[in-house]
Length: 386
Image (tube, rainbow, N blue to C red; front, side, top):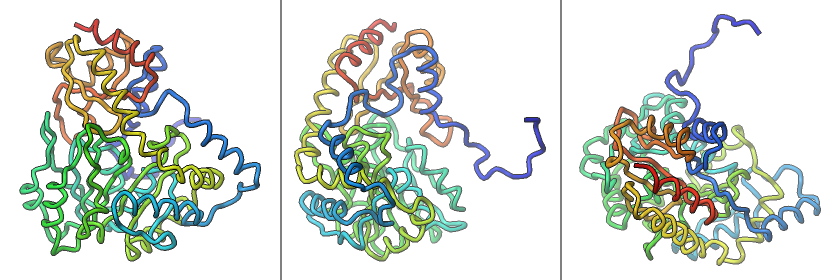
């Protein structure tokens, strides 16, 4: 078609295609090993796939209830009570979503209005700020500093104003692989105890946590749980990111508002997969075994590249590993990521894209949710980069 004059003013003028799409496309064009976008290259459980097929054959192919099928919400309630010692009512405090990103957007859309301020921590997953902006809010950025990427809670306290409506936290953290500790949660609880601030706690990697650390869900802290949307992801947990299945936990007063937005954003999520997940969750080993499963992959990958010129920053959770290349080159992380993809045939994500301003710590993010042979091929390449 011919080009026509634009009739609209973009609501996101600075936003382009996500880095995940860009790097995956570049990997495909250059026949490179794709350790950029966060998805496994191995299959989901045959049992779970069979349960989906069975649900389809049994006729569960029409709209699910807006909040999700009750059997799945009941299993999530049991899992949450067993893990974190808190009871969420399956009928009024749990909603099934079309993935974690949809749940995050819905929570923001339900709460944020024009002029509201939302505090996020950079480097931050790239869906937070655009969702805030689309809903008229203002993003307030708190920078975490490499290599520890710890939150300065005194700085957070100083940034809270009468306009602060929400804080978004993420643990285990994408892209850094760090985790929030109990003292972090207690500090946050104290800071917001006498405010009306609402939290979104992005916990999509809750079951992928290493070295015998315990996941510190906000659900474990009453002063946080009472004001929090907790977001989780079946796609991350059960190796099927393309199914786009997640859920949100929140106290009833917050969930009422969440569902008002949810019903018009997506209405309901995939029906047969919900039935399959309800059955699959009954075996708790299906999610409790994830920590050791992915720790083995992390350790295997790190050991394979121990003699390379890349420096490993510890990963305490997620299936991402940060590598510093500061001993190799002074090139920007974006340029070096492109060079690695085109010249060396391995794709990663430059960490600078997760910041709101030009901060380049010479770090790349690699996904190790891959088969051992994939990690071996990747390591062979990385070991030759000088």
